[in-house]
Every structure is written in structure tokens, then in C-alpha cells.
Length: 458
Image (cartoon, rainbow, N blue to C red; front, side):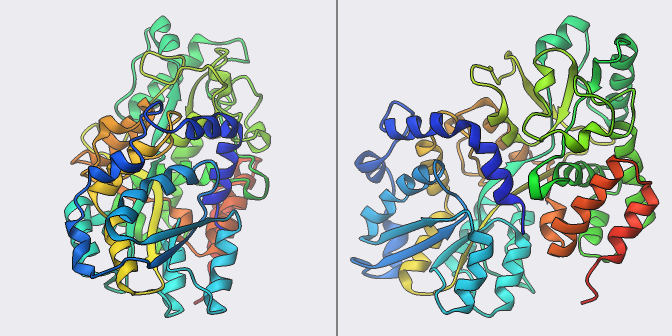
């Protein structure tokens, strides 16, 4: 079971009512530029090459469900009005389990939004996925980085254009708490550890700590710890070795991996550093990830490493902004000139190559669609893309804008969430469990050996 959907569902649970209200309002109130006005604003010429599509239908199957689905559906209207195509959208919480069943049963959708490159590889292996049309490939070459195109490519063939994205390399904090103490946002890993030491020395009450963390997530317990590991591995070993690790070209218990785990341990297994407002190191394993950053608000914790989507977990009324109650800074690299970014996203795979399907793929890979999607996203935000043609000012929240800036940074080296790329038995199996065992007391080598021996032989 891949964990993308679980994270999405858990994160959105608290904002469902707000989001439904926002999307129901629609129109210009939420900045949405939908319906006729949006249709009038796009160039229909790129879709004329696909012929007369009037009356055709394209089916879309995805893990993106209510309330997020509505802004997607709205964003397709200009394409539908240009081409006469009807897009039928189906979101399912059981997407990852049901898609392979549907494909095997000959009931594949025309288009599926795949939340992991690993799932794309699995689907391509069935022979059911169609290579992306040349018009889509041209858009991706123009609007996305080579790293993003590579994740949609299997064995040298380009299949799936990127869709949405998220950024994980963030540390949440209180700007006012930092200002009150004179703490500076760190720009290197060494500065981050020095700051942690300073906060620990300034707070000897036994409750207030530099860091707070939580990795409990039901069946998916452990995933936030794997994100820590991936972010640090990308920083200590570099992107090339990170790729080798993810692809098992080096073993999971390789010295480079052990070095990264030891660095994570300097924070997560350090009683002087964690777990602010929550307890000792072991409480990390039993603290729900949704609650793990909340001690920042009462001043018992100063920093919490979590993705951009954590913005949805702050209580209603919390101002998330540079001058707000909470904000985020870039999780620093070994030196200030390097800019590795860990994240995730979805990819558009087609199981049919009819002209209307190709036209829709081309639309979704364009800067036009990225900006329409930004327009239709409600005020609570929570959506962005790595599309370089996306106008960042259209994004609805400060954290979405900050995330897009990270992705569009010319020095950024993006890498996908490693556990999403690994075989399921490891990525959402022994890696999650091993990191949980590590938090509760198992040693570095024992955990790395345990995960390594679980790697599938073929």
C-alpha cells in the first residue's frame, strides 16, 4: 500500500468543511477564474491538431477525492469548451489497490494520475500504458526540469507527464519565538545543529526542546521518519548516491546510508533535542504526525520538520506566513550553495491513445492548465506544480508560493520521496517499520541490516 493517499486523506481531514465551503462559493470570491471567463482566456489552437473531437469522452481515475477534486474538474472546463470533449472524473480512496485490478480486468480508465513513479513502472510492465504523445513530450521539455521528465520515463520511453507536486524539505517554526530569542534561521546543516544546541542550553526546564516530532499514522506509521532519512541522505550522500540507494545499486546497509542515519539520529534520538512538549525520544513513535508540530504554538518546541502539506494541520485561525504564528524555512543542506529538494507529485498515465486522450494529456502538461488549476484552487491552497510556466503569484497561500519557489529555483536538485520509489515490501513495509523500531530503541546497524535483508531478490 503506497502512502501518498493516506497522507493526503489524513492531512485533509481537518480542513474538509472549510474546503467544501470555499469550493462551493466558487466564482471570483475565491480567486477562481472558472467557467466561461476561463474558457475565453485560453488558446484552443494546440488542440486543433487532434481533429474533430466533438462529443468524445475521456475518463480520468485518481486518488484525488473531495474536496480537492472540485478544483480539478473546474480546471478542465476550458479544454472541454475548446474541443467538445467531456471529461469524466472519478476519484477513489482505493485508487492504488483498484487501478491494477481494473487494468487486469480490461476496464482501465483512459487517464490515471499516478502518485508514485514506482506505480508507473508497475503499470508499464503490464503493457497497458501508452507512450506519451509527442505534443505532451514537447510541453514537458519546455515547462519541466529533466529530473521531472525522468520520473515519467521507463526504460527510455517517456510515458507520463508531471501533474501536481509537493515539497518536503521544510522546517516549521514560530517567527516570533525566534525573534524573541534572537535565533537566526540556519542556512547549513552545521548551523542547524548549532542552533539546536543553543535552544537546548537556553531551555533546561525538561519540557521545552528544540524539536518536536511524531511518526504515528495508523497502518502507515513510520513514514515521517523515512522522509527525514531521505532528506538527510540527499544532503549527506548527494543525488547520485541517493539514486543508487533508491534503486538498490548500493545495499540499504551501505556506509553512505549508515552515515545519513547517524546524522538523523543526532536530532531524532537526542534526548536534549526531542520531543518538545510531548515527552522523550520514544514518544515520537506514538505521537500522531498531525499533532507533532503543535507544541510550536505553545512554545514548548521550536522546530518541526515536515512537508508543505502540514500547513493544513495547524488549528483554525493559525496564521501561516512569514509574519504569522508559524512559518517554514528550507531544510538546510551541508553548505548554503547546494539546494537539494525532496518531494512528491502525480504523473499522468494514459491507457488509451485515441486523439481526444492525447489532446487532454497535452492540455494537462501545458503552462495553460497549470495556471487554470491555480485559479480554480480554493483559498485554503494546498496545490502547486513544478511547471515553470506557473505564475507563482496565482497560488493561494504563502506556503504554496514558497514551495513553488523551491521547485523553480535554478539551483534546485529535485528528488522524489525514496520510499515511494522502492519496492512496496521495503518502501511501505520494512522501511516504515524499521524506522519505527529505530525510534523505540533498536540500533542503527540492526535496523539497516533488517531493511536490507527484506529487499526483493528480483
